[in-house]
Length: 486
Image (cartoon, rainbow, N blue to C red; front, side, top):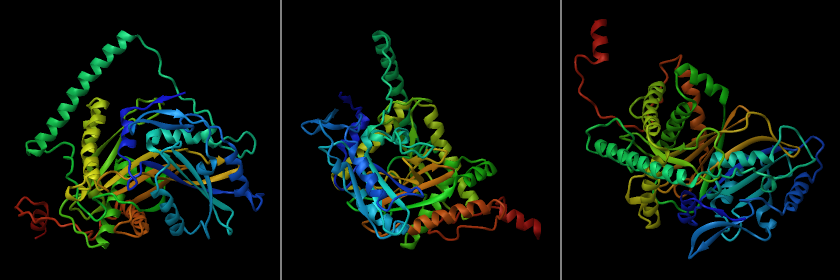
């Protein structure tokens, strides 16, 4: 069996380099069963290696013509010593040390002559827990696809019988329904017309914004703020994780009439500002986030990638966390409105257009010369709502760790699992040695967002933002209020 690769999937292969691998990953923390033997992880490792027969795409490598990816073709035999490995640490409960080890695993790219996935079991001698670091090439699928697949290897009950890991499980990929050829051609032509029309409209609206004729639209590409985290992506990674009770996020969402995504964007924005201020950064404009948009229709379960990634302006000039949130809500909804009125393919091609320039800059090693598209890439994906088990081991946490986009920045991915928002952060280690402070700042920023609803005196203090003084008039609120008091 061979599998065709879409052009969007191929871009993850074409743009990959040793400095910027295009795999995504997950760091899972698990608890052994109470009666587990001392060599539980070793036994699990041997069992996983015994599953040497895989299903597509886990049994497929990329077939190439002159280096160009053509299709996914099955291999005759899996090298299980490569695909499933085991490691020993002093203490996996030491999060900073675990993060450093995972960062080393994350920075190396997958062997391009083998199926593009790996499982790494990580154990220690002191605890009844262990970790699994999983990485899969992004060309196999987007976040929604991979989450759906990997849930196949887990169950809601402990079970030693019938256990099958994800690469050997039936993924039940749906074949496309056969349609009338004439109808398919006419539908395709109509989609092309609508897509081109909407793409031209997107570019025209951006031109109006560039000319300052109409400012209310999506951000202009490459207008992000340069920081020590942006620029040419280089080899080497730092990783961190954190947890936030998602019930708190949903409660706050209702109180402030904002989506959970907007609340987390605000917390991320404040946390990144505080982190960069520690390194002496000051800002005269907002930071930007690259926001992935899921282009799948409701209920669609096809494989591959169906996403667009567009910039969203964050907050600037307000010290009140609530007012910063209102800025982000408006900026976020401007982009969502633009996406809603455009054909999904138009947004996808717009993404390819701007990302191709960004990738060209990276290939030519001139990314440092240009402003980035965004300072943060933020993804938010719903995960399993209940506790899951990997065979008979309880899954405690599942942190997503993504790839780096051309132009750098920090990639923040959030996955909800069992009522907890589990967040993974990754960026280059060229200028920093740890992301642990950023994780702490994001946690504190969310706490402050909760508290500021009832306490307007709370503020983010000076997070390095510089605001131009605008001459005040007699109708300025503060002056007017002061006049009444007098």
